[in-house]
Structures are given as C-alpha cells and as structure tokens.
Image (cartoon, rainbow, N blue to C red):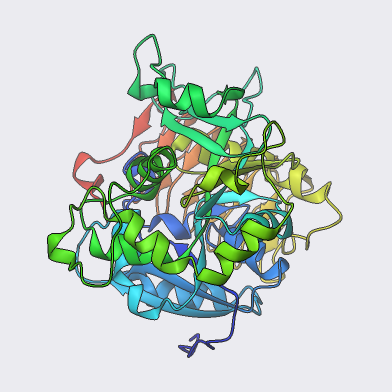
Length: 464
C-alpha cells in the first residue's frame, strides 16, 4: 500500500492531478472501473500524467480521487515503479465534484502556485517550456494547447454506429504576445462567433484556432486559487473559470480597493481584482516600470498595457497528445499508444509487452500486450491487442485491434475485431464480434454475431 506522504513546503509549484471525474461521456466503460484506472496499453490511465510530472522533475503530487477508489488506485500505482510521492485526497461519498470544486476541496493544502493536470491526458509533453512561459510573464494562468488528435481514415469507434465528432475547442491567441484572449467550445455557438469590440481594439491581431486542443493542463497563480475559494459560483475550470478570467483581462477594477473594504461590501463579479492586486507587490510594479521589457512591441505603452490579469497559451508541437475522455479517444489512445511511445526515445518505455506471469502458448501473436496471469491458448491468432490481467483466450480464436480488460474469458472459435471488452465479461464459443463494446460482466451467448453494438446489461450502466 502506498504510504500517505506529508508534502514539503519549499516547492515553486505544487502538482495537482484531477482523477475524481465520473467519466460521464464514457459510462459504458465504467460499470466496474473508475475512469482513472481504465487501462491504456494495460497501464492505468492515471500513470500517464504522473509520468509526465515525474519526467519534468516534480517530486510530489496531490491526487484528488473518489474516496472509495483510493485503495485500488494506490495498489495499482505501487506496481508501476513511479518515484513521485503521492498524497491522495478523497472526494467523500458519491459526490460528483467539478474540476473547480476539486481545487476548493484541497485549498488548505495549497501554499503556492499550482500545476493542474487531468488524469486523462495522454501525451509526451515536456513541461519546462510552459513553466518558463508562466514565470517569464508572472502570469495569472498559462494553459497548454496541443494539436487536436487526428482520426485515421479507417478508424471506427466500437459501439453504436454514429458519427461521433471530437469536441472542438475555439482558442484565441494574440499573434504578437501569445496571450490567451478567447476560450470556448464550438458547441457554445451555432453558426457565428461574436467578438467584442473591446477585444478587437486591444488585440488587433489574433487567431482563433479550431485545430488545437485545450489539454486541461494549467499553471495557476495562487491568487486565482484564493479567488476560487471565495467565489463558489464556479464549478469547472475549463468551462467556467478560465473563460471568465480570460475575459477579465479586458477589464479594469472600477474603484480602488483599500484594506478597509470588506469582502461583504465587494461585488462578487468584480472582486477578482482584489485578489490579483493583493498578489502584485510594490516591488513587482516598480520592476515593470523601470524595465525595458514589454510583451507588445507595437507601442510604448506600459508593460502588459498595465494589465493586472494576464493569461497565456503555450502551444506545443509534440508528436502526440489527447484526452481520453470519450470512448472514441480512449480507443484511439489504445490503438496508437505503442506506436507513439516506442518512437520517442526521450521518454521512459512502457512496461514489458508480455507479463512474466502470463502463459502464452500461441505462436501467432503480433504486437500484443498481455497482462499478469493471463492465459493465451495454442492455435490462436492475435494481432495488435491489449489483453489485461487474469484473462483467458481459448484455442481456435482470432482477435485483432481490440482492448480486452481484466478477468475476461473468450471461449473457443471466436472472431473478434476492433472491440472493447470490459472487465469480467465472457464471450461464449463461436461468437463473432466486430466494432463492438461489451460491458463489464456481460455474457455474449455462443454462436451470436454482432456488429457496431453496445452489448451490456442496462442496469450495469451506473456511474461509480
């Protein structure tokens, strides 16, 4: 069992991993497994962001997670050899906290600026450049943007046959300064996007990107955390808090706020400047006034135009990155992770393809990962699969391009292509499955044929 660790109070940044989400867009996968433990290449999803942090020099991290899953997650991570020290903070009961709510939950543990990362970020990013951008401008928030993942032309998402489109972020970035000036989801608009005159006047040259992905990795100033704790109207970071703060860059405090002004007297919609100015010391102001540095080279105005709130976007051109927050993106991560990972010599390799406790009798196996204590019988053909622990594949069965989770039994003479088989399901003899998702503990009857279906018991589709 991973020991609870008391965090040191001398770090420049604290790392926070948000792993308490209930995966509302992928409930079919989560009838028996919390989202952060869903396997990608037979490794729990949460390993990937923790590996990013460890590789970037972080020694400690706070992981916010559902109280009921703390033990399982701790045991899973103990097997993977991470050196980063983890403090788990449990979300009590069956609460479904938003990302901003999760930060509020741990606010007493936060003593400095924070790096927030989602448990579903699968990427090969080096954090040093985004941290340096944040430092350079003493930013309020700096957000990581990655190229939006491209789906291969022949890619099919297992399950119901529908034209599922990846979520598109609309990200406005100033072409001269790298300022993040606009942030929204395309689903918030029908046909046109209205841009305020104030934004157009202040940022004469900016681009709204639709082929970038908000990676849900943010460097956040401590004053923003303090503001979030005080203003409880925000429940999410990406959807609510960040667009609000990005918009506030265009504003100014309406009146000078002095020490005699109580919190109760301030308008909640305007008090953000109180928190921002409280963090900005007189020395900071003096340095900006006497420095020749200016983040905009087109005029001789004050540095940052006197802006108290400053948000930036760091656009990374890394080779791969996605958020495994839908069935489609989860399946794409599994399909591409070995190719992506093995081609990058700068990152630690994934654990061994075939566990030394697995029994593999097949002589026809190509590019597969086999988990602990799994049994692959002879006269089977396996190509491009991830097969989890304690699973059994009987003889005369063919499986390709599929994700098989733990404790799955696949009987003789089955043909399975491009499927996701969840924990504990059983595929009986002579079954043919193509582009299907089979739910946890479900039994697919012998001799049946299914294509582009979700096969599960309706009462199992409950959120954990």
